[in-house]
Length: 195
Image (cartoon, rainbow, N blue to C red):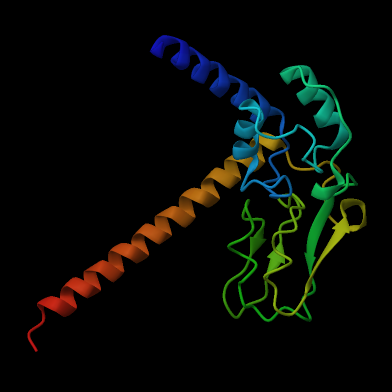
């Protein structure tokens, strides 16, 4: 019985990897999952539909239908609408340098530091829109890529988005671990210091 479940899990993991390879890797969360990989895994398990990715649109839905054997279906409008590639643009006159847009960018396409002007590296921006909500001064706008000077003609390649997302996650995890270790060391030092 265990061999059957192991083989089933292996097929599911293989299907999830194939689905993930088709996804645009914008990491926008519009599908209802925290990233592209969890969405791919949920599709592979049969827990969600193949029509929840606006950045991939109809072409992705057709490719997922062929891969999974599911019937093609229109994009679920609850997840957003398919449209042209968009890029975040920061209004330099309004930016206060709060740095609240930096952590949510899943591919580190925004550069800047606290109390300094921030800018978007247009060649890296996936158009995920995750930087908009945390901005306290509404200085970030999503524009069609064709309207942004210096924007590339094509959206960033999925494999590069995936690599930048992995690097972003690793950096956040490393910093979280470093902060926790520093806090623990301070607590130890405070308890060891005689009153």
